[in-house]
Image 1: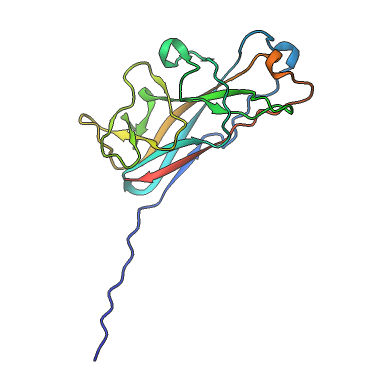
Image 2: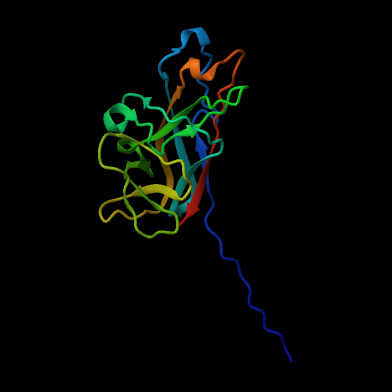
Length: 208
């Protein structure tokens, strides 16, 4: 007798995500007495870029999921955003930033993608989106340059060439991101001590 063995490995080409300037987006320090006690406090925005690098041309998408929760239902304002430069309070684009010592949610931030500046292998491309596990890809909003991402991990995004909007294989892709932050009125927060703003989200790659 003789034995015959069949073996092998199925694997994806390795891709890795990085954020320009590091993983921490620091908005700095805001004195409580400089904040409004009667209205939402808009704390501006910071820009970064998500880069995805692969060892060879690969179809891969990405999603972002809120790790903190308890985002306050408030408007987040910033130039360049869709919807009249406003992330409405009902938007699913809100990410949590923690609570005060008294257990009150502090505020929220939103993440948007600059669609008109997103590139794959150095060339500007369309940004497309779908539900993870869903083969139906579509254009990621059709409007102003910046549009919000979704806090739920079941939605993923990637780059595409032309209609029909289907994912393309790339070696390097760059998605410019804008993070805008707002906190609730101080009369609701009732802050009596230094209070950290502590948001966190996970960016996950999905091989297609």
